[in-house]
Length: 199
Image 1 (cartoon, one colour):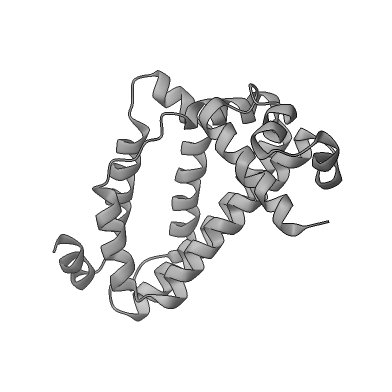
Image 2 (cartoon, helix red, strand yellow):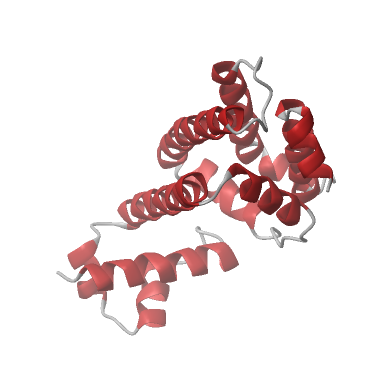
């Protein structure tokens, strides 16, 4: 078995699921897009369910890699500046509600597992960021970082779970995310950190 072929299947499936929704994309569609046979597909995955589990795990690893890069290769000043820049960008998340809807309705076990692992991962990295921020004088020293990291991770977990309901109610989830991030950052920064954030 080739790890490269498996990665290509996961990558192509992710692109198709994001564009068309999970329910409407078949194994045949994925194989046709990649120019491989179904026999080849089944060498790597027993079913579409297993493919989705691998896809969600790949997403968690990707997010962990990004967080570790920010945490260990950049100072917190760079991280705050990066968050500020991204907060001003216009993201296209129009397809995400369909993706989340399909996961919740047709793959509830995989979605629940993903949510739990994502929550635990977010909590760990937020804790580390806050701890580093206190050491660098950019985060309030009196902050309860254990509870704050749980709170922030819970906000993001709930936003993912209720994504399509908020969109259906007429709320722009991207804008809500920007507002939430701004409120959270302002709540934890020290005076020095706030000066950096405002500038």
